[in-house]
Image 1 (cartoon, rainbow, N blue to C red):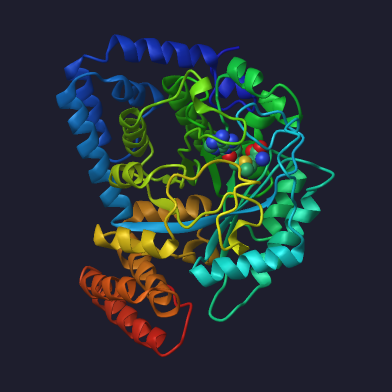
Image 2 (cartoon, protein in one colour):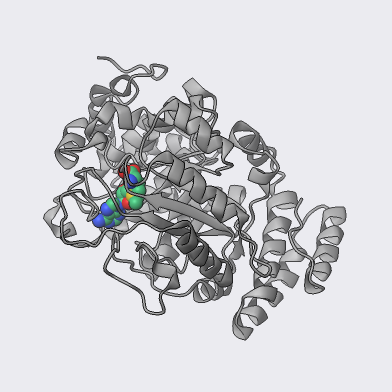
Length: 472
Ligand code: SAM
C-alpha cells in the first residue's frame, strides 16, 4: 500500500510508510536551521503547512527556533481567532458500552462501574442545570452500545435538548461525540441539526490501535479511520478530529493527524472544523503511568503550537482534562475552544457534589463556569457562547471562507460580545459581571466597521432590557 491522499481507504491516506519516512526526514533535519527558517517563512503566510514541514517543526531541537515557532503560533492564533474563546460543556448520556478500549473505564468488561443511561426526563434536568450555568453549546457523549444507546436514542435526546427553553436559557448548538457509524446514520444526525460530529481517532498507528481496541465494533481500524469520510458523505460539514495523546508515540500521531486533515480537505473539499487535543487521564481502573507514551506539558504545548501553524483555519479544543496552568499555556498558542464547569459522569450536572462513580476520566480543571469566565477575562480573553455561523448555515467550506476573508473582526467578535453580555445579565456572579462589562466596553472599540460597532452597541443595550439572541 502506498500513500494516496485521495483514496477512501484508511491505510492509503494514513499511510504507515509515509509517516515513518516523514519522521525520518524530520529527525534528519531537526537541527537544520536554514530549512526551519524557510518553513517558518512559508508558515507566516498563513496558508498552513504540509505534514512533512510541520513534522520538522515538531522535531526541531534548536531552542532559538522553538521560540520562533511559539511566537508564530501566537501570531496566527491572534490573526484568525483574535482573543475570543468559545465555551462548551460535555453532556454524558450513557456509559453503556460494548467496546474493549483498554484506556477507557466504560469498556464492556468493566463489571464494577455502575452503568447508567439518562431518560429523556433526566436529560431535561441536566440541560436545565447546564442552561442555569450559562451554557449554550453542548457536546453529547455516549458509549457504543446498539441495544442500549441506538441512534434513535441519540436522535431523541438531541431533539429533547433543543426543545428545552428554561428562563432565558437555550442550547443553540449540540455537537455529537459518538462511535463511528454508517452514512445513513450520519445523514440522520445531520437532519437532527447537530453542529460538529466529533470522533477521536485515539491513535493513528494501526498496530497500536488494534492492541488498544481488542474487542467490539471499535476494534476495526479501517472502519473507525474512514468514519469522517462517511460523515461528510452523509452531509455533515463540520467534523472534529483528535488523537488521545499518551496512547501512541506523539510524533507519529501528530503526522497522522495532519495527514487526516489533508485527506479530508483534498478528498471532501473541507478539512476538519476542529482538532481536539485530549491527553490520557486517570480513571476507574486506568493508570496513565501504565501507558509508555505519556507526554509532558512542554511537549503538549509544542504539539498545540505546531498544529496551530500547520492548520490555521481549524479550531482547536482543549477540555478540563488539562489543568488551569496547562490550559493557560495552550490558549495563547492556539486553542480556540474550551469546556468549562464540566462533569464527566452520567447525570453529573444535577448533583450538588461532583459524582465520581460513573466518571469517564478525572477532571483536572474543577472550577465553575463562572470562575473559568472570570479567569479568561482577567487574561483579556473574550469568552464567547456564539453559535451564529452554524445557525446561519455557515458551516464547512462556507465557514472557512469567512475565516479566510478576514471578516471575523466584524462578525465573530461582536457576536462574542453579545453572547458574553447575555451571560453577564443572566448568570454571572457580581464580580464576574463587573469584569465582563468593563471588558465589553473596551472590546467594542476594536470593532473596525463603525456601522457594525454602533449596531452592536444598540443590541447590547437591548440585552440589558431583556432581549436575547442577537447575531450578525
Ligand atoms: N464512545 C465514543 C467513541 O468510541 O468514540 C466516544 C465517546 S468517549 C465518551 C470520548 C473520548 O474520551 C474518547 O474518544 C477517548 O478519546 C476519551 N477517553 C477515553 N478514556 C479516557 C481517559 N482515560 N482519559 C482521557 N480521555 C479518555
